[in-house]
Length: 282
Image 1 (cartoon, rainbow, N blue to C red):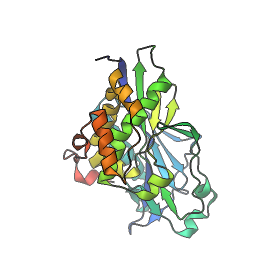
Image 2: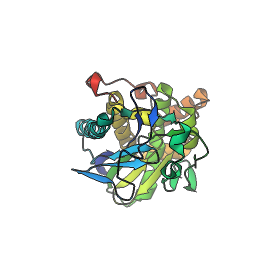
Image 3: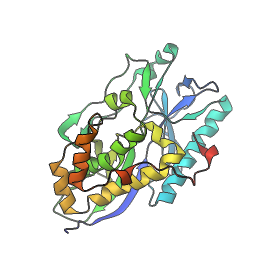
Image 4: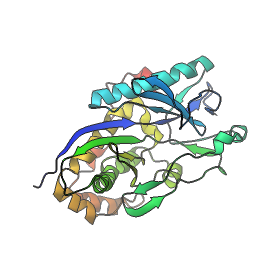
């Protein structure tokens, strides 16, 4: 077994959320938050809040453990909900929601600020979809993976591509067996999407906003860590070169890829975290 030293792994996130009124209707972030992509509202301690299109987005500090990750994500959600509760609103964890037409006439509702991204299964750079002609918006649960690569055999860029592939098999495909939103998967959540983040590692972007809910946080953290650890074995990197992306519509093909990778799909399936208090749910 040829092991690769990958140290100091951290998991951060800049999750997106929908805002809903008391009757459950989607409401835009436009007049509720001041922070923007270029100038987020700094909450101190590595936390921030901002509006993104009609969504509200937040930032957490990098977590060094599962316990920290859960704590940071719940703290962020509490921060945002404390602003929304004054207006009788709250966060809602979902992959996509439909908005009333009047909410999408605002200039910000038609600005899609996502910069270009990469795909672990293809080469090149890809632009985010423009959804301004649609009445639906989508949310993502983006994971920021920080790590230190102690080898000269692979560059960070090469390792990022491997991790993005592994993430599909440990996290993205199993997540869709639990909750699949075809709309988000088509526009913003294809397999393999990631960004290089030279300062620390990469951002993986395929997971939907449904998984920002407290009951899923433990699973998301653990599966993300598994993706990185899998890539610390050079034999696994060779296997990742030999497989193709999962195909949700073809479970037989996808299972064959799991078999090649020697990953048990059953062991990756979501098991709810009973430790999370029910009233913390967004």
